[in-house]
Length: 471
Ligand code: NAD
Image (cartoon, rainbow, N blue to C red; front, side, top):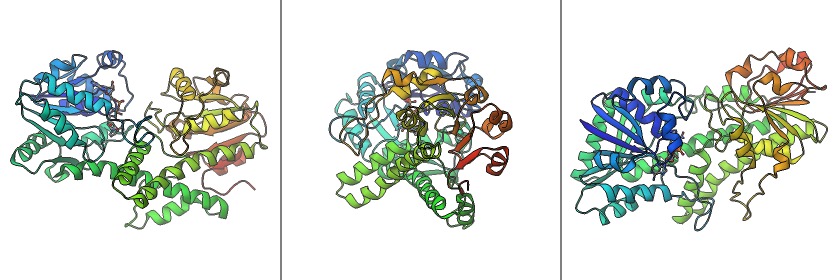
């Protein structure tokens, strides 16, 4: 029986391995992590991450051919294929701080693999890493190998949180990059055979290592760029009276452009887009391409602009101050169907409102109070300015209440900010909400999900990104 081990039981490692275990009953899959609470949760009924369909997949294979363990070394030692799916955040200090990927976790995983291995292994980059990382990993592994043969493959993950299981069941493509040597090609074939259990051959792309590594960064940069493009257009729509939904629809009908990923919003978030673009910017700079770096940097600048534009709109609309006003925040996760709040635009929007002394009442169906309080009290590295932004003071955090539903959040509020596109926010009883709010009652829709006319007819003053403003 082929044995797979995945180092890192996070948003990628957990779901990816669960699907491999489900689709490949002839393969034993161990997912290992240094985090005891995470592994305990994977072995319980309360999985550590929320992802539609995940629980069902895990329950079908856990204990049969899918195992979660903190015994990292044992499972790495026994595996034929070792996936590495550890976090690769942005460096916060030293060379490349604020841009370069921090490969500390990766390097320590690679050194541990070299240390504990007693047989040949295929080591698969599942994490998103800078192009040429495989070269560094090869050096670490071969210099410590004791004669063991390691083949490095790049197999970046393209799943999106919120639709991870669907994406893994039917991937647009699986990308595998490897060395062009016979051993490299053999390793590619071995990994291809795993995916071939359920992915059609034409959807499995094989390339050289550097193309695979760079494709992941490029894919995220292109996706984020589309969001920034439509968000930039939303500002122009508001200034001119055009409606961004109509513009998106009209341009999306052009098959060269396509209609997906053209929804305007308060900005993109998540652990990947910003970090991967910053990484790309850094790689361009290191390769003597400052103009290309600047091009990609603008994608993040527009994203930051969109978030501050939203905050300014809220404050300006509410008679230039939100001081001591209650603002209901609906949604805190960076997108619907996930409880992930990493880099969510809600953090910046809430901090902006708190900076003007608003008091916030926050509701998200999947995000806990601890998560929100932690996110709002955390420092964020501002890569454009050399200083760190100040953390929120404990008294500011007291201006935040986390509540259990949208009606509790909006009761007695002066304004409502919709920051995540949860389906349940589309069907709220806005008449009831209006009746229980202070007047005039404002709705600021950062996701373009409400029926603007309907809400205006109820009596709300409505701002929806990229749409004509109230007269
Ligand atoms: P995560 O933070 O949820 O999970 C990473 C896990 O690795 C953590 O549980 C951590 O404890 C563990 N870990 C770190 N060092 C370890 C070590 N030495 N031994 C054992 N465990 C270790 O991160 P994630 O969201 O799963 O992302 C992982 C990688 O995949 C990142 O490079 C990310 O950019 C990439 N990626 C993420 C997504 C996404 O949607 N989250 C999508 C595609 C790619």
